[in-house]
Image (cartoon, rainbow over all chains, first blue to last red; front, side, top):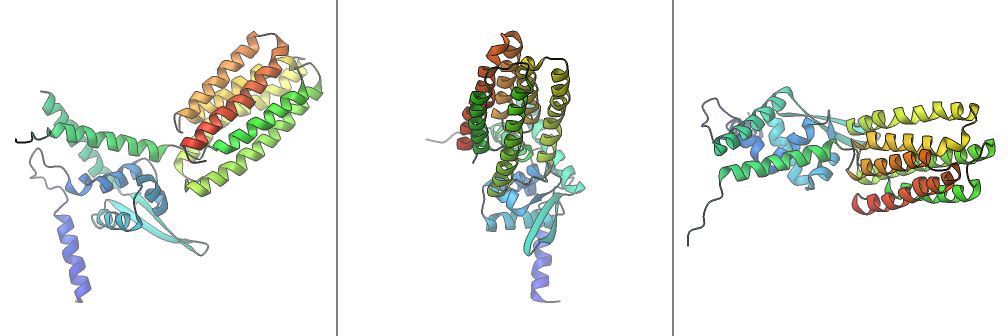
Length: 121
Length: 195
């Protein structure tokens, strides 16, 4: 196994550890979605079948590099899927939310609501 | 002096606000052309000057139908231009929702126009057109930025006024609606929403 493949495996392992586990405490949010830009990506994809890389960049007012890094983390966790194609000669990258991503987003929202409810009581 | 930590629910409320705003922006059709609206408004004012007060002649209807064709062409070109410059896809779900909500009142207008003509009610067409165009902008605008449905409601109000007012007022109400409202709201949309 090459060094690159080993490092990729360890990156995926570290991301999987960010995915919520059933043993989380009541105040532990899904760290993978909780980060602001990743939350923005998932929120935007929750109301669109698919969005291109440029749509997301414009919508979230971020840079190419920043969006790439965070989208990759969500992709590795299988919360979003990425399709690459060509529009004529121009490469086109489209993202869509996966069923696992939608479920995680809904869980995250429910979790937030529960925190607000708990704070009110 | 120790800084009091912010309560966790304050962060949560902030996050929920961010999610709501992102979903609203992502789901709204923002390629409504502001500059296109301004140009359509100018052509409508010119048309109102040429057409004169509405009467029961086909000339008056023909002049306005010609303006409608010009306005559709301006709207199409400026929407495509804004979509390309702002990166908002015209094939996306927000655009589809906008189109599906915008079209039915316009189709109703296309059906009612020959009915009004055949019944000799041409002088009442300003009310019909302003009301139905306003309805289209209001229903389509439900899937766009907030100012779009507000513009639609203004058109609807002028439409109601056009039905209530004496028929010759139709010329000025058409100029105020298809001219004035397009120019004013077009400028606001162009300045606040990127063209």
